[in-house]
Image 1: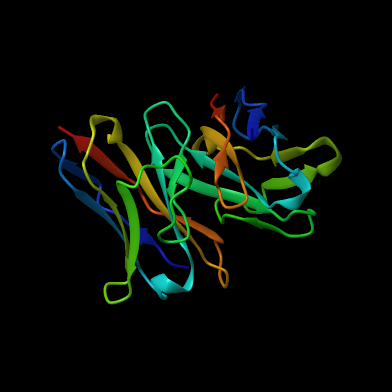
Image 2: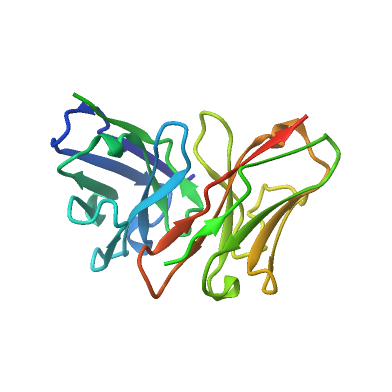
Length: 114
Length: 113
């Protein structure tokens, strides 16, 4: 059974940093592209970033480019999102999703507030 | 860049059929696959249609997807509506030539009443 479990979401002050993690199981992790997608409270889905199977290619939404960094450790079946210079508008539930977004985690909540 | 535009909300009665549209603002709707996700309150999204018209295992055949090049749009059709179909639905596609790479529609709230 495919499982994606996000962690690391907390309350952080504007300008702060945070690293989210996503633990994957039930599939061959290093065969697949992975994504981060977020959803602000009461709003729609917003794609954040993706990383290729080997970490060699990464892409970002304009809203986070230069502030967020996606990475992965295939030896640990884990996906990460390093979030710097956080803004109030980054407040959202952050999901990791596999490849064609056929599987999603349950999300981890990031709240940016003073 | 392109946008995917969905109606904000639709409503229909149980047993009826509803269609949710997703219109691509520029470039051909046929140039990249379209996916559809269902999101019930408090839950993560799940795929109901992938690659324009394919249903994942476990998704009932009441759900179907299509694309229409003349209107440059994709559609999700749900027949025999059930109250459990009440949810938010999102279309999604890819832009392999420009940024951002993954594009979501704004979502449609389906009410079954």
